[in-house]
Image (cartoon, rainbow, N blue to C red):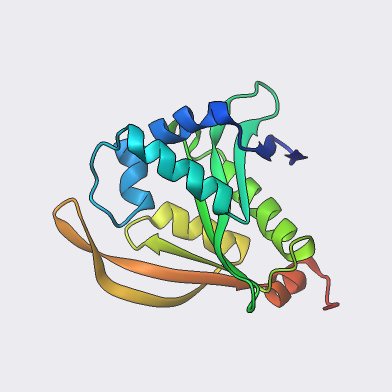
Length: 180
């Protein structure tokens, strides 16, 4: 179990999958997480979540330290072992949006991934209309690497998909650690 100033970042437990499932079924969250159709996800989806968590390099639950409130999840998945690259996923319950928790957990996970997991890069995709998420990712140090134009249909409109990543040397330079 890890801790930051305000958060506890811990391993996923069997009892968490119902909450993760509920989070995915929140319209505000689902439409920002997946390019798939935004539809209610039934019980079979919980099996998919369990498999994803088991296969992930890192899959953690985020809670507040003070009250133990369940905030969301963060994961590193689809790791490219040879090139030391992993995809980042993050979802917070909407009632915790705008409190700085995304920035706090991302800073911890990025640092941990480079220092302890020996990753070289962390990659993510974010929908172009999610300005708040893009701002957080840039604040942490992620750089836009490209745009898939009009690659996601959502809410009756086409959205761009923004490809972002951060490299270990960029993170080290931002922390003042110039050793490789």
